[in-house]
Image (tube, rainbow, N blue to C red):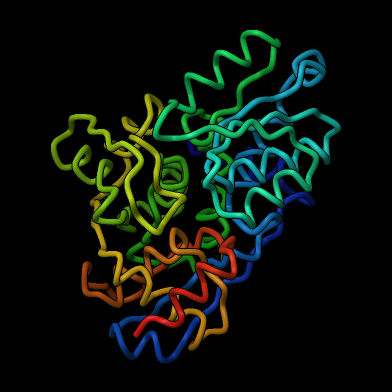
Length: 315
């Protein structure tokens, strides 16, 4: 799989942004380590998801592209698929919850995708997408449970370790495990002694429970502010990869997630969505004891004004 990540990196040359790595003397002082933040909030469409979507859709045959692509997503993968479809001339169709953040709904539609809204309390998005795709012949590009998606997402860690090669710990947000498994594969390929730890909200801890018990657990529409982690479970592809390549899983509270968003906004002038701030939340809350040099994937910055205002106004 490491070779697949390297191949994805070549495929993304000139397409994905090589996002900056940022540091903060205040953050270093607070946690007692050197912290390096990989800022995927500056990626195209505002999140790491562009990497996997482009890597996957660009490898489809012309016949597959002509049929159109379908996916299901709470927002960032939806935007990524829609943007890649626009770039490559592929029609895109997105099953997306009606209560997804308004900024993500607007951006997805703005990139030209057809939105198929559903109620997550009434329908299962994957089953709905498969039903529609079968009826119309669309090619399904899942949000995380696909080797091409995993390889694309792993390029974020590949770049980070090229820029900061001697990390001894890497913290990665976890929803369905595409980013976590891809980054873990890249990290172990680049620096086998680097520990990789996934971070989840306490309210959406299915991956942490799955990791520690080695039995797949699920949650249904968890009520976390980190909407990018509301996936029901790790996938058939990502669960074995997480077990193989990830060293540990930790969880953080809703309060810790909001505090991390505030810290990044006020102290570093970075707009990071709650899902993207999970690694920083783990550091600031003490959920993990940092080592000497720590990399953190800030996975995205797509947060609407109302949610950001609510977080910033809390004390």
